[in-house]
Length: 282
Image (cartoon, rainbow, N blue to C red; front, side, top):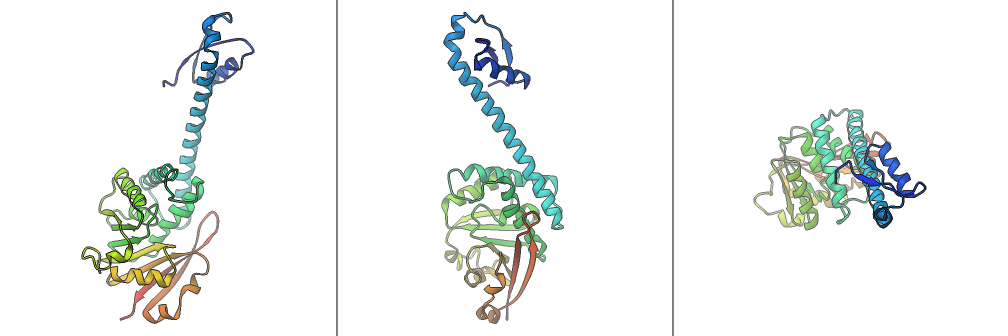
């Protein structure tokens, strides 16, 4: 439908006319006078009113979406800057594209319980890219239980040369991840539909990665057990955790791994977050 549409005026006090005047003031339609006694006007009154309401809804939703997108991007740029991470305009635009697909697909499949764009920006995207603060010189990374692509895809956006593999047991989520990879034109990144343990002996994944990462995949002890088979001899396990992270360092963990816990805080909600790094003892 063209932005400019021709509409009939009905009666002076008819709601169609009042609504059409609003649209004219907003520069969304032209005004065409038709006699109040016109049969055409009376016959089309209901249809015209529906058309006007539809047009207002389209305008409102479009403006709301554009506003949300700009707020999302602003949130990502400001939040990452607060953490000391430089996100370029291009990288922010890629995250906007990821977020738009996430919100669209989330209407059909369960990708996230968070619906507010600004909370998605902070709790998914800013939290994910915070991981780069703790990386060394990794060239390959596998994300276990990637879900909606977190933290793997934002990390990939921040590190274009990094080889990334996203693992999830849900085929629907993997279909989403593959769609996002295509939409963002990301290279050297794969989304694999599989249970994590089924890949432990796969020659393409066993002992092939510098880093294994996850956000809330499972408790630390279980995640470490799942992660070890993917590590090369200098690999690091990265577990992104919320409060009570220190309580997950059990005696079994401390006996098998050297560990370090780093704290950071999400910039707007001030939520405490922790990165637990595990290195196998030899």
